[in-house]
Length: 318
Image (tube, rainbow, N blue to C red; front, side):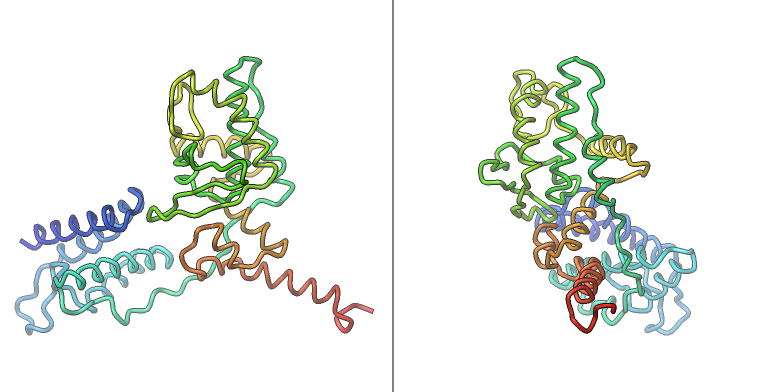
């Protein structure tokens, strides 16, 4: 049965992503969803056996052809799926068929010469600098209780580090105590694909971390041992959901709802506005490809234009 063959193929591919590529569970789940949608598209069609051999409809991933991929994309657009989502699904299929080619399961890649849907490069939303300052000051102590004070200190410190190092949610939750090199002013971060990078920490983040390690972390640890830098009550590890709650609660002071990813984009935006080059921003953000960082290019161009108009003799307004 085609469905059994497809299931085995997808299962092997997902194992490859988890074990060999080291991708995060949520990323693997996204691949599984996108490829499962294409598999369902193939399997729900009955083979048109009355057609000539070369026009038969494929029902398995191994027998899929370029026209099948194109028809899948057309169906997505017909169902009002936006271009960015379609592009992501096509990227998942490209990775799948590249894997199948390497393992010699197929001879031809059906995703070749299929253009990705045109997508507008939308600049991620970012907080203004005064909004960011308000947000970083917002975690308040709810009572004089020692535990409440420790939680407020932890939340302020996490926000400082989040913004200073432009981290992802999974990265800040997964930071270990041994990854922090406070005396040297940097932190070791494990990003997508388990890739490691070094991110610098500014003076505000270093001061917040010193205070957290001195007065808050011992209270949260409750004399228990834990490898994680940021702890919940009773030395428990923090979850991604808890971090979303912390950021959401702190952003209420600005009058805007901010997500953890918005803090990451705010850091990148403010760096570019202050003259940082894109290669440096790419390194700090942990982007493997400069094209991902180029979404901030227009900010650099705006600053270039402003500096030119301010300092060039022929550009000054008389």
